[in-house]
Length: 382
Image (tube, rainbow, N blue to C red; front, side, top):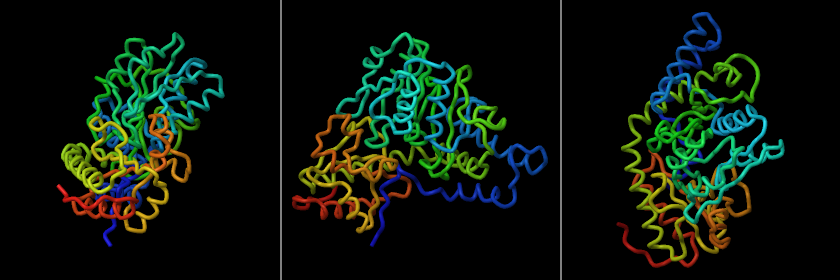
């Protein structure tokens, strides 16, 4: 039985070139990047080369990149770093953010900050006009994700960034799902802080980055040594940072071609499913969407049961963000979008990547059809 992995938004296989780049830093070049001897300098040089690679990819300065343990820490550092630098104030975010943002907002509410969670429409978009109207004189931060991890909808970031810039408010963007998948323009989009993660783009787990535009006033939330120019204490994970830098270099080379290819495969998966299953709907924006993301709802079907059955058939998919797996409740993202419960309980996210091929799509459609109730008669693939 052919195994088909359709959960690249949760995590990706590490690229062979990334593995090769990392290996020497486990065995031969094992120094602490903060040490001044030759072993340490070798590690430091590797960290700074990775920092320069990521900065170049984003079109920013290397000293504007801070390495973290991943997207969650980057989000926490950005939001708490801004909030605690000011001590009080109002924060604007949305109802469809990742829990790394939502729960950080809730923690800050308990600490005395005001947080407004903007609604999203039926396609997962936050209206820039809603953002403009929600700004208050004491608004200290706007935080909106670039692309939704569950449905793939790409937010109107440039319009929101322009609003933030006009009002002089720092703008944080959770770019974890978009970084390395679609072109980003942090300068043109008015972004002050951008979160990114390595394992979403064929790099290792446990490493991420936060872009912090020069002049952005914030404080560290993790205390210790002088690492990362005193912005994030802790010994650098040199092999993972090297891998992250290499993964970004590979994305710079391959991103455009891969996006075109997985978009075509994603659309083939959708066409094949809708032609064979009568009660299925697409969640998210039909066009303004990440190239490899397809979120489907099957009415009257329990998503967890369907996913377990698909797993037995060799297909790995998810019911939404990997960080919310195990929940028996409807997706909070789909609920915020107004998707009826009878549909949202049967939502399945398929996310494609570099290893996905055309040979994966037709078997996936066939297995989905076989496990779906009231399946329609087969129709020819196109």
